[in-house]
Length: 111
Image 1 (tube, rainbow, N blue to C red):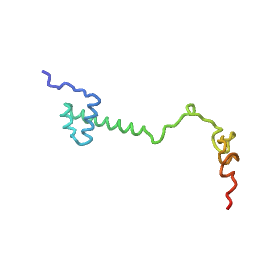
Image 2 (tube, rainbow, N blue to C red):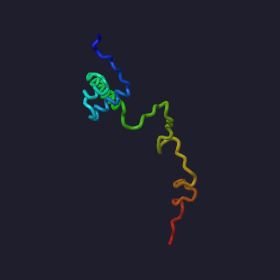
Image 3 (cartoon, rainbow, N blue to C red):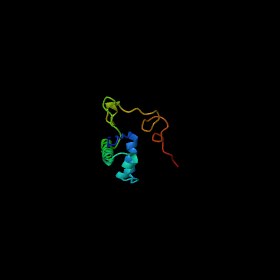
Image 4 (cartoon, rainbow, N blue to C red):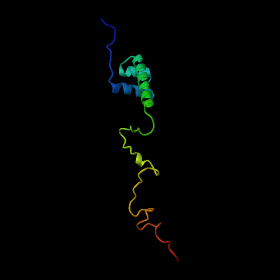
């Protein structure tokens, strides 16, 4: 007769639940192993793998918005600023255009 236990494979969601229960202190590694019917070395391996996966995911994420490539952006060098070759269009009657009903073009109020 074989004295070895049959090997129990946990689904990813079960491994996650096991890891969270150990992480939050709801169970010790020994208790988690008994609860999920796996060896304590399996619990240690699951916790180590989950911790490393979390660290890898956090190191891969960088703060800020994702950058745009030159091919994906709508780069127009003439829209770069005030000294550009093509001036920015303004709405008719906007301040500084010299036309319309803007307060800058009006005669100051006299008393």
